[in-house]
Length: 76
Image 1 (spheres, rainbow, N blue to C red):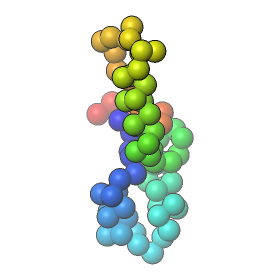
Image 2: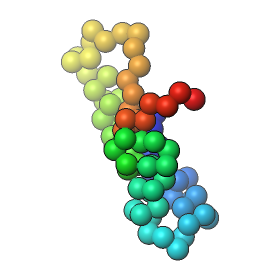
Image 3: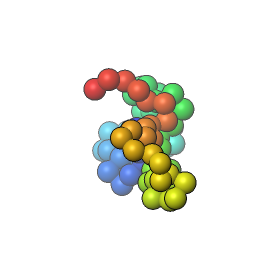
Image 4: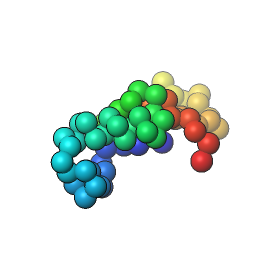
């Protein structure tokens, strides 16, 4: 999973870089982490992927990984 904008990420912004707007900081953070879309993901984007997997349209999908990562594909 990519870097998702959560309450914890907002707290880190306040602690580490409150002099910048959250948007500016988040864009830089995503870029530095190698997210191809150069922005943080949103919780609703993760929820949409999970919702899709629960629908009949995904009934033949097995044994695979669905990356919801904005293009982040570094090996950890």
